[in-house]
Length: 156
Image (cartoon, rainbow, N blue to C red; front, side, top):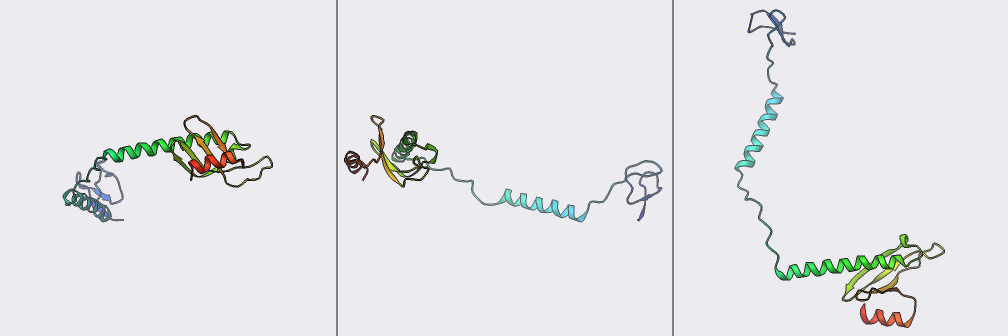
């Protein structure tokens, strides 16, 4: 423990004391080297960011009419696929088990594959489904030639 002189009254004060025991004046502490290094580092990084030659980020170019139309068509297709997957799910024995894959929109049909559990709790395997967006009908492959005809005409 070192002893220093109080700047106010000239009395002896420990370097660990917060105030002079004689007059009560607060004793200022020296700033540590680590604090100065951290402050210097922050200052250098900030100055470097301010004076760097990096240009401002470029704004994204406007989309063309064709790109906007393609985005709208893609959104429409996604909405149809999601809506008719829900319709197909509703007609299954275990709707929560339904797993869809390869679903796509080919105007005006939504086609794809669904695998769901049957009455015995076993998955049936991927079965084709077709949904007509014009009349709202949806069907899963039941092995009939009528389904095969609709699938072959509209989904392949």
